[in-house]
Image (cartoon, rainbow, N blue to C red):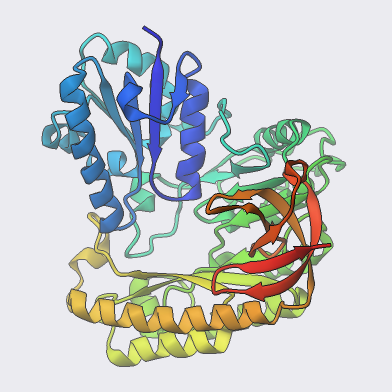
Length: 453
């Protein structure tokens, strides 16, 4: 019987990359988009919020019905939720055959051999050998995600990542540059460097991973044992031939160094886009969150970035309804949002997660209060986003054409260097993957309308 795998992905860009890696590892399987025709289903999960967790459980329930009609079907749960709950998931769902954490996916071929012998498998933990280069089967042919650092050493009181993905482990510059060179040689135009905190890249190196590194990026090896940090890595990536655009996410404010701010304007391929999670505008709440900075520090950081990179687009994450958040704390968040004026914001209600300190904090807020504050925050951030977008009308933007608008195929879509989506009319599919100039003629809250020049 032909081997067919269906992969369903929840969550962040790192999860999307992990799914592409899973597809690359399973060379003997055909990747299909219909779970009813698969003999292996892998669900790549997210555990950041309860809503994401609930969606996984709902999907497992639906897939269990398919399995009743196809008892030979194997279903595996991967990713952060798998790491968080491990064997408990097998006990909860009889339809599941395997639970495997994100740092163990490289073992999949051997695990599947055991799976088809009738075993139910649980494998979690963070082995050091998980920091390796693995084959990938990319979905997109124009843009690619490339992780540079796994895990996180920060202990934000609401976040499960240090538990689900472990402490920080940086990939070597050689691994990263080799992957990027292969992407460039394959025609990729844009890459996004990934990490829970990219600014911490290299902080775990005991010896210099650049020692003996040849001039693959037009640079000579650094003398002595000077480690490669994120700033040096960006310089090296910028020197690679072939790539047109470089992005990175996510940056932690407390680790965003002045050296990086001063260097970014010199790197022509690095886009003027920075995602900088604020989380709260209240110093009291920031301290409870263990974020390691104050609102005053954050505002000064944004000012410094905008002074050096005047055209920069800054986006953010904000959580409302954190335990102990009083009305005044929430008003301080609204005030910060109005003063900083982000290009866009991802807004969330606080969701207590297992094993995190904030799950047991006193003064938990009701769902009604959290929802009311979220709606007020969304109204503010959406208005500001549209106001900022409207200022781009009549301007000229360079966009990388990604494809047709799936909702209206008479329009093509692409993104500006500042990561704003632009829809425009065109006739030729040959534009896909090309850089074009468009005049902005209109805007909505979350996109721009352009006219091809």
